[in-house]
Image (cartoon, rainbow, N blue to C red):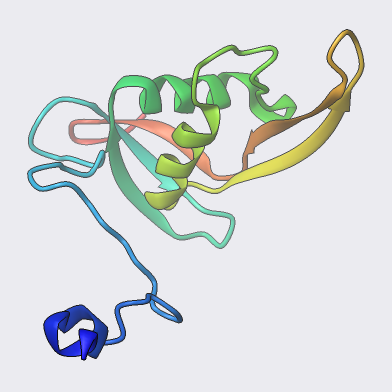
Length: 130
């Protein structure tokens, strides 16, 4: 009887086996070509090349990854509130970033992530790539 009053129940609204991707009304993806941001040319390890535009802390994180190179970045050496969030956003755009789990000692022993940029990323200038 409850299923008749709840149309979601009829459609199997439990979400089992269904990927759910929600976005708040009026929000935009970080890859925007029309407003602000910095353009980059990304080349993946497979040789695929494409352009992205990022801004804010996502751009800061991408610049930190580029600067650190093969050494990579950790939240310990490159403090920022949401490294995992920035990496998630960049990966959504197709940027290849490896996560290496490392242990650490000290007053609060445990583990942390080291993020290493695996795509080739270069600033994209009007009329070509840098």
